[in-house]
Length: 168
Image (cartoon, rainbow, N blue to C red; front, side, top):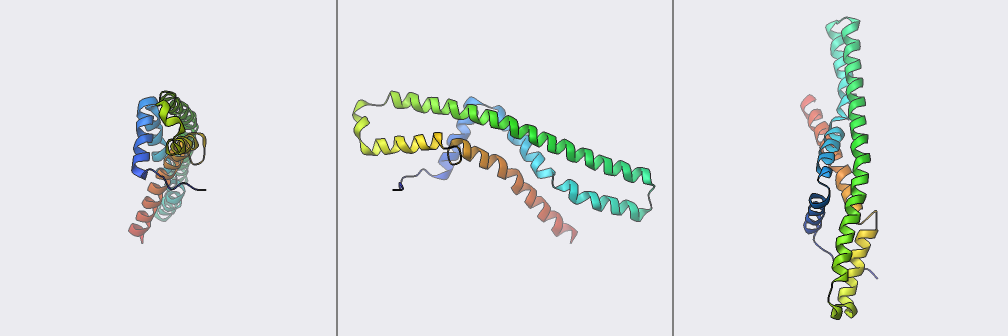
């Protein structure tokens, strides 16, 4: 039977951000690095042909064209490497945050009033809270992964759409 109790989305996001700020502030830097790389990486293969065709139309020598192609290849490798680094480091920090927040939850659970231990509403809230901490795909860590991964993709999509509108 599915529960009808739920917390508002913004309240849950605030809880996650407070947990990150309290336990692992490095997550915000990794988030910024990953988002920046994820937003810029799709522009490398999109702009490379445009730059190469513009160089061919100008009648540039072969050396400047090769330098431009090498620069784009280097930018793509650097962005992909930084993105992979941020993603792998974030995974470690997300697990650490999840463990620390779980410890806080269990400390609160151990200090709750004895009269609440048999209240069905309290027990249901405890069960929902445990599901949130132990479920990797839908819990605390899963939400962090969804926000972490999709923000850069959304920015990239908006940027490419804007670029297509401007070039059309």
